[in-house]
Structure formats: structure tokens, C-alpha cells
Amino acid sequence: MSGRAAIAGVGATAQGKLPGRTALDLGIEAFRHALDDAGLRKEDIDGLLTMPGTTSPEGSLHYLRFGEAVGINPRFTASLTMGGGTAGALVQMAALAVASGMASVVACVFGDTAKTGGVRFDRASGGEVPWSHWGMMGAAANSAVAADRHMHAYGTTSLQLAEVAVACRYHASLNPNAVMREPITVEQHQESRWIVRPLRLLDCCLISDGGVCVIVTSIERARDMAKKPVAIAGMGQAYTTQTLEAEKWWYVPHQKRALADAFRMAGCGPQDIDVAQLYDNFTISVLLWLEHAGFCAEGEGGAFVEGGRIRLGGELPVNTAGGNLSESYMEGWLHVVEGVHQMRGECGVRQVKDAETCLVTGRGMALNCANAMVLRTA
Image (tube, rainbow, N blue to C red; front, side, top):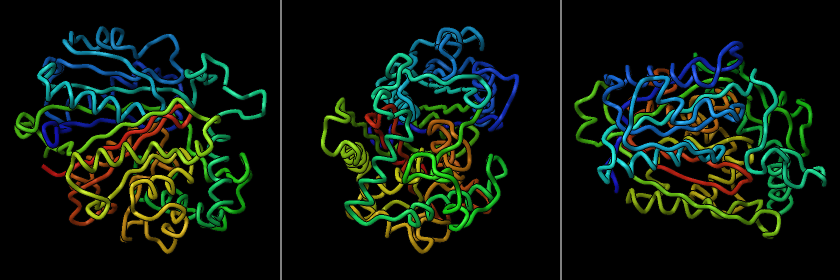
């Protein structure tokens, strides 16, 4: 599979608070941007994979509704919801479809109005958050347990979590499309209010409206399109159905399997990664990804991010557009887009010099769905 499929086009709408928009029209706009980016017409699309937004229980971004709205009749299609693990899973599914010949050009589409669209609901539990009767409500509680356990076991500090937040905000300040562009300091992080101890407001991702589309095709066909293709060199997925009943569920150890498979397929390791887009619903998540990927040993993520190591110009620039923490919360879809832009050399002042290999990760639901991709210049 390595290098048999490529990302040929990406598109995104404005992000943030977009009153009056719907998940459907945001997805359509992103789809059109991605077509323009690749130099394609909608008639070229014969595969369609969609992720209905968290505020769209009526299915407005279901593949059938979306295909009808844009006027295409794909021969390969599906809709999938796995939270922040969906973007990577759908792009990988598209790559498999292309490699097998089931489709030649696949559009992966997401749209959501989480910021203005009303009450969010939890798909994993059909509306009721698991363990809520114990006071464990929402994603922040899960990651707060992870942060607390990491601090207890390894001496990780809130100041080290602040390094992640400050780096992401600095990168967002260089991104004209980011929602939060005002730089922050470690001191401001420490002064922000508690959400779920030990996580503060600036440890937490944004809630945003927006749409994103990623178009996948073969390497050969992508070379004839408008932009330089970005090869999907390695892919990996990992899942667990165990959460609180597993002693170390908070460390999400299955993420290691997804990363190991992606590295194995790409024939590389952490030492070969020039830039990383690591799923950052909370600052602690970045530390765990760094450890699982082998950039540092278990328990050393806090020390690794100190001293500007993950900022532009550092040893491993992470989330160079601002990530979920500062660019926008598109459930990991914009991590893929930024990875593509970095591999094309399109990021301007936030471009990582001579970047040829990018690691992109995603994770969703109750910490149980994880995936990883290695992207390369083609």
C-alpha cells in the first residue's frame, strides 16, 4: 500500500462562529474548494466518504444527502462517525478504495456547526455520556484523568502542558485562517480558569463551525492534477473497547499500534519525521502522542516539549497551523490539511524548511479510536 495513493486536493471553509450556516452547506463549500485545489470537476469524483457533524443528527451530511446536494453518483460511498478519529479513518479508507480499484478519485467531506448549531450530543452513547452519574461528563474529564495520572506517575507539570498551548497559539498567530491568533504566554496559561483539574481553559480545544474536504486518488493520476501530490506513505489504525475497566486506559496504549503500523508501512521511524500534526483535543494528548510515536520515552513527554522543541524552528515542529487548540476544532480534519500544505511547501512564514515527511494522527470517541498516517512529498 505504501505510496499507492495520494492526496491531490484539500479545501476548507472559514472557521469559528458562522451563524446561519449548516453542516451541509459548509461541506459543499469545502468540497468545491478541494475540487478547485486539485483542478477537478465534480464529475471526476466517483468515491464519496462523509462524516456527519456532531450537531447534525438529522444526517444532513450523510453520503446520500450530500451526493444529492452536489449532484454526483459515486460508485463507492459511506458515512462514518468516530469523533476525532474519523478524518484519518476516512482518508485511509479512500486510499484503500483507490488502491483496490473500487474508486479512482474519492472526496472525504466533513461539515459541522458545533459553535452555533445548538446542543452537542454524544453519538457513542446515544445521547447519554457514559459514567455521567459519577460526575465524569464529557471529553475533558477523560483527558483530565490522563493528565492527572501522567503527572502522578512521571512528574509532569502544568507548566509543561502550557508549553504545548503556547506553541500551538504561536503557530496560529502565523496562520491567517486560525480562530485564535493572539499569542499567549505560559503565565496566561497558568492564570486561565480550571475546566477539569488539572486541565485549564487553555489546555482545551476550541468549539468551531466549519467544513473540510480531502480528495484522494492514485499517485499517477495526482501527478496530472493542479497541485503537487502528497503521497500517503504509511497508515495505521488501532481500537480498544476497554475504557475505565482497563488499568491503564488513560494512557491510550493502543495508539502505539497505529503509529507502529504507519511507520512500518512507510519504512521509516520517528527520526525521519520533519513535522507532526498530532491530534490535540487537550494539551496532554500531544505528550502521549510524542511518547507513543517514540520521539521520547514513556513519561518523558513533558520534558520533551520544553525549551521550544515543538515550535517552528525547534527539533520537531508540532501542529504548525495551531491545531485543535488554536486554529479550529474540526475534529482532526485540519491536521490533514496542514500536513498537505507543509508537504507542498505552501505554508509561508510557518513553513518547515525542507520538510519532506509529516506524521498526522487522530483519535476519537472515548479515547478508543486511534489512527496515524505518514505523508511524503511525491
